Amino acid sequence: MVYDRLFSTQHWLRRALQHLSHTALVSSLLRGHCLLCGAATAWREDFCPACEQSLPFAGAGCRRCAAPLTGAVSGAQPCGECQKHPPAFDRTLAAFAYAPPLDRLIQGLKYHRQLHLARTLGRCLADALAAATPGLPPPPERVDVIMPVPLHTGRLRRRGYNQSLELARPLAKQFGLPLDYRSLRRTRATPPQAALPVKQRKHNVRGAFAVKGEGLAGARVALLDDVMTSGHTVNAAAACLRRAGAKSIEVWVVARA
Image 1 (cartoon, rainbow, N blue to C red):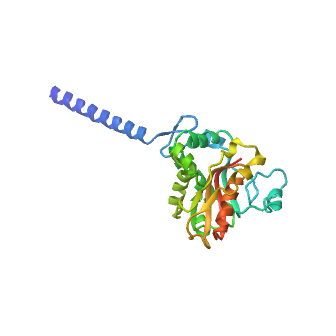
Image 2 (cartoon, rainbow, N blue to C red; image 1 turned 45 degrees about the vertical axis):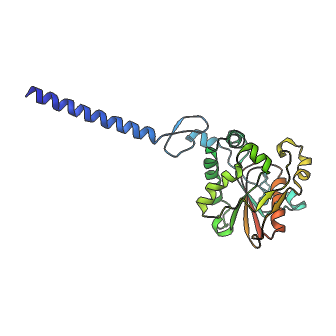
Image 3 (tube, rainbow, N blue to C red; image 1 turned 135 degrees about the vertical axis):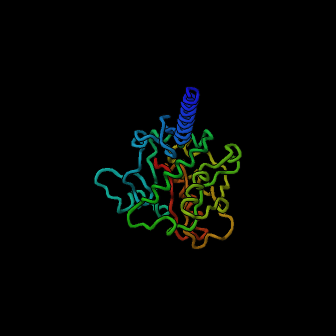
């Protein structure tokens, strides 16, 4: 009798410990870690609440180039620079300002092969696009194809991947849009724009792009890049797409400097 009671107690304790162990394991598997501070997060959450609040979400900007607008300046009209020198693209949408701590993630993806960050940054951009300017139809209704800004083949070989293409993959999947990374090509190796004075950047990318094939006539294109600074790179690419027959061009960037 005593033995039976002892066996029953041991059996209950063993089952309880197994249940607790299983629960702890599941809980551990369903937890993530904040990409910025390392704190534990809920499953599929990339940022803890504090770090998410610290992200530099894009504020009011020029509707044409997304340059930040300050004071009483309205975004209803293009900024002064876009009025003087209209770009080849129609609209720019950015998820963030290029500022800490977001800049660390972009640099990690771009220069340090942290390709897992493309999913996070791409999803953030997709969320920003889905909640963009009131009155705009959703991306699948105003865009026919997503085209990442290409790297020259030499830089692509050295880096091993194009960060803009990696960012474009989750957007194409979420919006159900075709992803075209072959038609737009970089035909001339150029020094990185970030290494040049602003006045030299326009000349640096002039004639640096070409379109392969004839499938862009009448197309509504989303041109995707990681960061937009002076805008000369995307403008040169957009001008090339215009010459190939693109009907409209939106620029989608994770961050605007």
